[in-house]
Length: 483
Image (cartoon, rainbow, N blue to C red; front, side):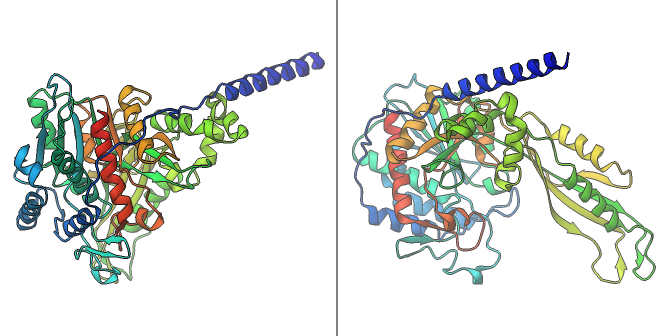
């Protein structure tokens, strides 16, 4: 009897191994093998770099939803009009909610659905200007590097798109399909008064974009075990929610504390959240990422990634130790703010902790709230919404469609020696407001960022190499030509 059991187990194991090897051998590359050479118009590179640098001198800072530095944005708009006379002189330019820009470039065939290109004019505040190597709003170019707040997030997008269109207008080019440029003014605080209003306006007009392209992933090197850099194109983005965990008490003198203080109660809640993370899975855009890069890996890695039906738990364990890859596998919870007493000898009558959640596709704001309630399981803690806006995760735009392949082709035309893959955006963008208009919403910044540039998002010494910015202009030209 035991022999039969052992032989059965060995037989099953043999079949599983054969199936896994077969799947690995059938794990074919999805990288484009043939595509046209790049064919874009030449332009004055030095002048383009100077304009980009100057754009960073305008302090279009977003601090709170609905608050606008009117003077800064009006000055920035005047600068744009002076810098791009063909765009603002020949095309239909519309102010939406006073400070966002919607620009329409009519195509030859107005029956074709339009291309929509997004970027945002606003930037995050600068907390420690003295810590910068170059002043954050000086717009300096030093040794081929453009320094300033907005260099990577996201005035490179606004200026790169406008440069591309201005160049093409100078050449009397007219696109086959209509191109719409949408530049919101409050992306950094949710986009409810900028991109949201633009999306509502387009929906009212019955606009159904062929596809939408916003900021997002970029070209990375060394993040994945492949021989070439990888351009990651966001085909979905996580939702966002911030909750306040609040404990109210009697307060009092710190010399006579209760058995458990309000802050102690909160600390236990955070401990429970951090030690009971949301469940992980390799699904949606994350699964598509492995499908696109897996065939370019070693045979052993191909065996693992081509058999996720069996190896998914192994893949999760491989990737969950890295904060970046772990964020692609599960909803994350990050305590970010804590408030207690104003003095060291007073017990707070109210203690508060803010936790920021980034929500995986497949989950919702309500399911996250329920998970938090169950995990904390403490009636002494009140759970409140922290701010006025929260968003469910976006739908996943399918990879491998004509629209995705066109973006894929454009990337390879400008950056031939790389791989392209879909992925899940763990941060939030204005594109979330356009997912009801199109099934094809992509998030990609056409830039090969180095370590210093990638670390510049919302940080000290934000910077971008001039050569990278020039390639961005060529990318946007090529994309418009391709569509």
